[in-house]
Image (cartoon, rainbow, N blue to C red):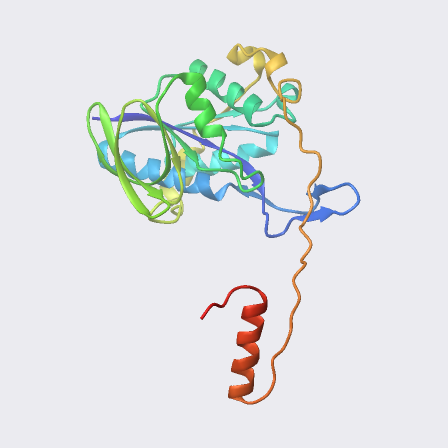
Length: 265
């Protein structure tokens, strides 16, 4: 059969090592390593599994600083055939709307795809908006919180998605946009052959003119929202200790529950 699959990904700071400037309310990125967004890793792994099952080609796309090329090169070592990086000053400072507009313009430019895969959200923003917004710009159906692809048919794909109380199986037409929660397996390790073959492929860099984008709708200019401040919430809880024998502690614990309105007999 063979599918044309596009995986959109983002380079993000390792949030486990990020600190916040208390005066400016901004992230301190200096000295913090950048990684491929973990949910995008799952999207890439799912794309590779689909490719192994039915054949096809994988294209990877990212928007970011020139250094973001490294995650695209990692994708090439794993089996992606093409890689594109949207990197230009006009793209800087974009919120989700401007990002989605820019990515959708790039997708329209570089080719037609059967499946567009996104991680459900980026760990440095946690909005989960870009995948669905891109689907709106491209007028494509979207299935969110996908955990597995069960079956791929000629004109449709059957997927499993996570919901509040369990899982749901949905049949979506091709082409569609899928946002991925977590693949069954972690992103695989590249093989020697994969690393060697990746040397023959280049990461193509694109700017606004290359994708026919209106720069007034890109980057900070095209962003109707701003991040005013980032801060860590202050803990307001208090700790109290109950002492005595088992009977005394049980009675005092019940009194605490009654005081908080959590105990009714």
